[in-house]
Length: 351
Length: 95
Ligand SMILES: NC(=O)c1ccc[n+]([C@@H]2O[C@H](COP(=O)([O-])OP(=O)(O)OC[C@H]3O[C@@H](n4cnc5c(N)ncnc54)[C@H](O)[C@@H]3O)[C@@H](O)[C@H]2O)c1
Image (cartoon, rainbow over all chains, first blue to last red; front, side, top):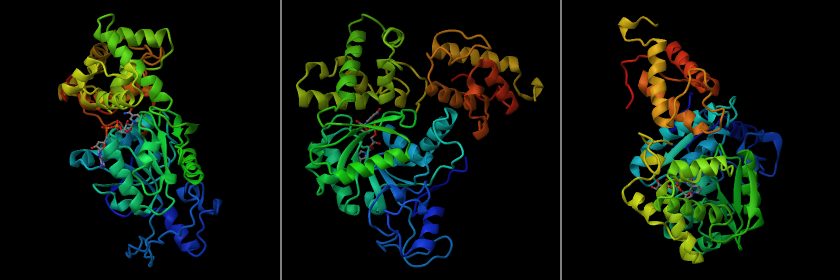
């Protein structure tokens, strides 16, 4: 595929070109001079490329002065979703910094991104003519200082997300959108942990992000117009169709889907039907694309359990209390496709 | 590439092994020319599983131009691709 994995400041041809030709009039309100693929036009910040001046090395063509870093997307968390979101962006020509604290997940991330890009190509989900943009990986958020947007996709846990978001808010330039991919935690609750609550919003990408064209976008009480507009421009560059909704536990999709999957697990637990039978009925009679239990395996049973707990704690809805069978599977380490076994047997770990 | 003495697999061997794997994973049997994805019961994610499986089981590398759904649609299409890529039956087997 010719994909290159770099671990350092990344230079892209477009950025270099912009830097050379337009160094004095880089105005991110400016439109097509940067070409449709340059993410810089997507974020209307009045910032010059390299304005931070932290990096004094020369560019690949011997340019001197400030760094010529391409505006890139920082994705935090290289789990199921972080890797999928990074792949979506890279496949659309947007460079990515992927941040992950777990050393083995971090080390394995480029190979998983590569597999996603192959799947995307196989299914025609990404523009075939476009070479993927560069991926950089890091164990720390520090490199996100130049990010045009941050997408947080860490474990579904309020404290964990609060820590990442508050750190990101301190690192990025003011006005940079901070986007949480939470399944169920209200955005306004997470907004308490950041210094700039107007920059925070939610986008709920689904797995795998490049195969699902619609994205639920969550606007919190304190989400500002600018952050929302920037996030929508990012989604349009990624060829996703947004649906903007209000802020409440589980928003729309998780509020409906997760208790429904929990019910499906309860049906299996009670012995009424097997997982295959439940899925066959939901697919064949009700038009569900994947079936709830295959979907559970695709989501990751640990993540589903976390999300149901978030929902149950915040809504009191008994339908969201995780069923014992789900808890048992997670405790046994059978987390779905990512461990090779959940409600189905896959024989090996899968994307 | 189909001379069997060198370990290179024949079309028949590949199809047999592939059918066996598919039956195990999908709990039904498939005719060599039957479209795996036509009914909608198997998703595009399953196609990626097949890529990973074929590479492991037959020791081939399926590169960019071959990553097209047509190559994964039927047992026959997959086996002819594996043959073309020089698949080796001794390589892996059904794990
Ligand atoms: N799995 C899905 O289908 C799905 C769909 C939509 C939304 N989500 C949401 O996306 C988020 C991520 O879910 P996932 O399924 O990818 O989870 P996951 O468990 O697969 O991955 C989470 C990753 O975050 C990492 N992490 C934890 N703390 C970190 C930190 N401080 N800095 C950097 N990395 C950190 C973990 O090591 C792990 O690799 C969750 O909020 C989840 O609810 C998941």
